Amino acid sequence: MSARLKYYLFISAVLLTGTAFLSSCEKAAKEPFSELQIKDMPELSARNFETMYTDSGKVTMIMRSPLIMQFAGEEDPHTEFPEGLVLLFYDKTSVPQASLASQYARYNKKEELWELRDSVVVVSEKGEILETELLYWDEAKELVWSDRFVRITGKDEIIMGTGFESDPRLTRWKIKNVSATIYITDEQKGNTGN
Image (cartoon, rainbow, N blue to C red; front, side, top):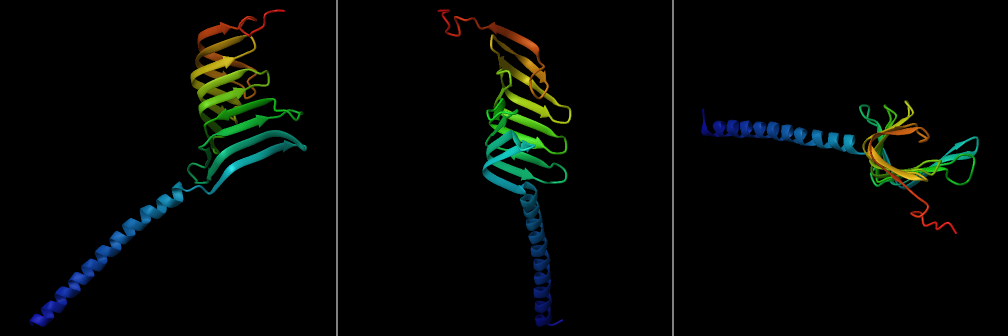
């Protein structure tokens, strides 16, 4: 075999190996990146979001958030509110009857489950204030609960404890492990009785 033929065979083998190597690297590099982009990107996102829910022309709820991101993946379709959420509930009046606010919220569409985290504050129709760091709201079961520390401030008392269950309107609630009950007297409220 001549030196020239050996040289051509060697160059051909190097080019074929290099091409095969580069194309396999290119595939490996492209696939995970494009897959990550598609899976991790929201289908819909909006800043300074506000929407109204109505029933027979009457406003029943207003939802506000600095950022909403909706993910429509088959395995885990959900909506995130990474910069916080405020819900105002109305009942036949133009003034909100109840409210809910948190620094983070996530709604799981399949399970119809809300997860509210970080500085969660709920004000019920009775004016009772629920404060906690984590609260779940199961729409299908009509159940609100937490396994964390909760504080409920009512008209005449403050109740603190761990674990909480209630109906969505917070009319029938219970704290599982009460750690303190503080009764608010007229003097503490600033009322001198005159």
